[in-house]
Image (cartoon, rainbow, N blue to C red; front, side, top):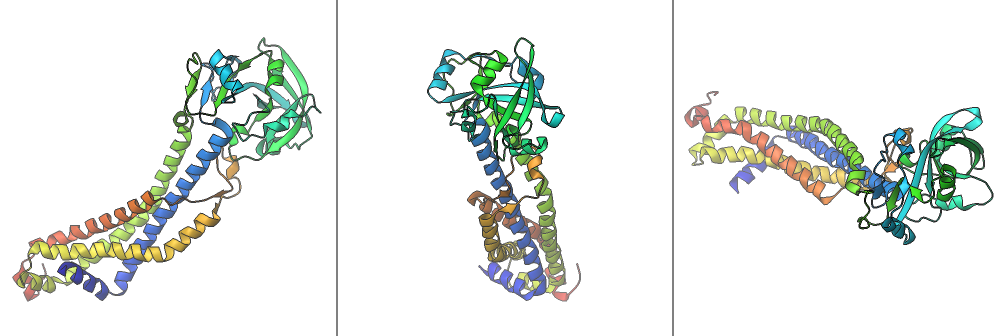
Length: 389
């Protein structure tokens, strides 16, 4: 108890030096929570949108399907097995058939991926019901990024050329019947969504699919040779990006945190140097050397506690405001190929706050203890005489 009382008395007596140390450490404390909250909010938003718009609760792939190899699409298709057909009929699965093609907007040629989807599916948020129209021979649904790249609008016609399973080229004119807005670029960039039955007829692939979207996290039994891919696999790339962003941010607030701790370290070193008579007096009054070390170590801990309290004063309203109104992303981020919304709403979890508090307290305690160890080597008689050691 005496160590705590003396620590508070010494900190208050330090004046402006105490305030500067606490202010810098509190700023680092708030920045750490804010940055990690933004990354966690982005992670939750990206995972949620990817699940709702693209992968469902998992996917069942044809064994030849490789989403990163467009040349594999020509052979990545097969007839659905009985368990998969039963899952489609019950609404637990929705099949997707895809192939590469060429589109010719305003006479220009651009490579695209044709994706067939059931217009009646309800697993994904893609507005596939817009493909139900009978007013056009080949209705097509595209995303806003694709519409911007092609410079087309709803109702425009586009010539499409493809090759069926036998290698025969064919072409027809498609009509844009809908343009959807989505934060997941992997279902938008370079992709045309067509009615599944219509694409099967075009490719001469009746009852075939490239992969299936699952409504449930567990696949039907006996799906071989098809392969089930769970959320951990499908979201692995997103998780790696999130971790890399956290690592990059850690460098920024890590430097700020080190500066704050360095200020405390320097303050403790100067304090020990200037207060040698006081240290000698403590020892002469009966305190052990390590009790005196504890006094200076507690001072560093008190710095961190006061910094947390100061950070809470201005940090709570600031973080609450950013969590409510969101953090607007700069223009052009929707073309980065990542699932990023126009606004990211930070998420400040209890675990994040507790971890940051412990980090600040433990780190401040350690940097205060390191210079305080020298007290154990001081000669109390020389200290009382005012001799510099």
